Amino acid sequence: MSHLNEIALTATEPRDKPRGWNRLLRSRDGAAAIEFAILAIPYFMIVFAIIETFVAFTAEQLVSSAVDTFARKLRTGQITYNMGRSTDMTEVQFRTAFCAEVSILISCSATEISTPKLLYIDARSFKTFADIPTTIPRVSTSAYADIDPTSFKYAPGGAKSINMLRAYYRWQIITDLIRPYITNIRPSNGSLPTDFLIVGTAAFQNEDYP
Image 1 (cartoon, rainbow, N blue to C red):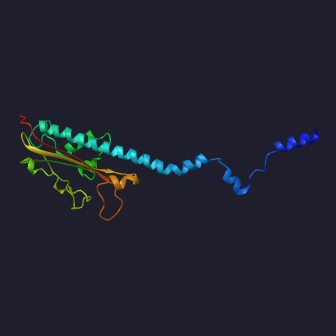
Image 2: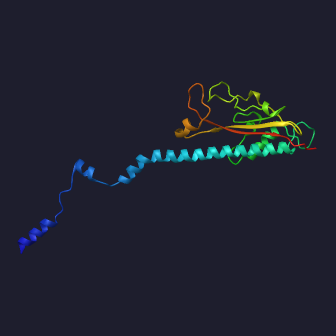
């Protein structure tokens, strides 16, 4: 009987635990945490890139919608310029109203309204639709050259005049992962690009309002 007990005890005794590197390699404790730590950085970079791309294109739609709204007000005489009417708006007043329209995503400081560095507005009248520019004015012929606002004016025409309203906004891209793909202004000195140029344009003939 004692012999059988000895055999049973021997069978139930735990085997020697692995020691040193063997024990470490066989251990699965904390594996999920290590795997998450390895994958977390690229995962969150992709998530942030998706979110930032979505927000940037949402801002583009917001600016385009604001351009359409103010083009309609100019076309119908709700906003006029230098006509001696209560509907007259100066450039500063027009820019202030435009900034209020896009304020859900884009904020303009008092300095930005008076001296634009991010938001540019070009409102002019032309003799014919053929005279309206069709390209983005840039400082050079490079496809990614900086914008050239020197020709921009605020001088919309009156009743029955042909007009163009353009708005440009420099949207700042933060996520490095999408900068090479979404930025359309590249610094000539080779520094890291940050600007996604949002463009909204409307060409129209004003109504024959009284």
